[in-house]
Image (cartoon, rainbow, N blue to C red; front, side, top):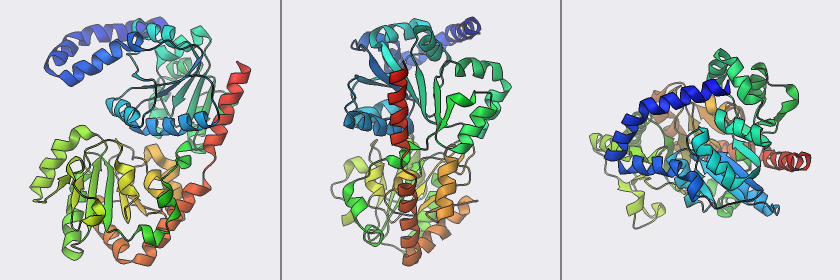
Length: 420
């Protein structure tokens, strides 16, 4: 199986090399990304007996940050190294001042071997769903235990892996322990054939994210005085309904402020063009000369990574994108909920099934069946103060009630170290 996988990957890299070289020549950003991956082993400082954490993109990096901070508070003696796959994940890790960050190279021994020689990890921790075959086989060959933390398994992934079940089990045998964030995720991975003794249900460590103390200390009514609606982590297809809602809300509530934060910053120009089509004035977050609290009727496009939680902490209501299209599967709805504000999201929350269910059941979340419902839902929450406050309180209480996964994950890490 390993020979077959590496043969296929090697052939794919060779076949794609002309396109890759051409794109590198035309795009400095892409060239830098490829070189970062290619030189990962060369650029790393040597670490003996380190703790290697891998988080693919921004969402996983946020979870990794929670874990890294907890490890440091618990006097973890091993050096901690973080790898990311996407550029957004890497940029966020740097913005969060996480030490020893690098881009994971291509999943092929030619580039992975130098990384292992430099790191010599005592444990590899994968965040959520990052299963790279060659990376896992390298760990197995070198006797390095692998722990999947905050594991998730969507219905789509189950269907895909189910078609290549022998290949999935070949990968899964390299993972020492699957620590899953919800019973649904655990049941799905068991259904694929993973042994029961290798699966734990620990919960979602994103419930344990720390938010700023002023926001936690303030009452819901105080936090909602600011007339700000945040449209966070928007994906393609979200911004159209968002613009329609903004236009209608401005007719009824002209003093409202709005902030739009796309999931991927490279879509900034696309969203600027769309805002222009709706003939709306806007400001870039990077060019603001005064805080959002001192404005009325403003529309802010957030163009800097890592600023979304700042806006959530000032908001009355939040809409989180990615749920109107089944291809995206939703984005993190726990971040705004932790600030005690109602959270609105779409029907397709494949990546956040348990969180969407819990928030909806508590009343802290409102799940829309149709994007056309966005305006009416926002209007109701903004004009019905009591409902808004009750839902905001329910959202925060849901987050608090489901904490504890971080401590359980830390316990597993300690146990794996003892058993090594």
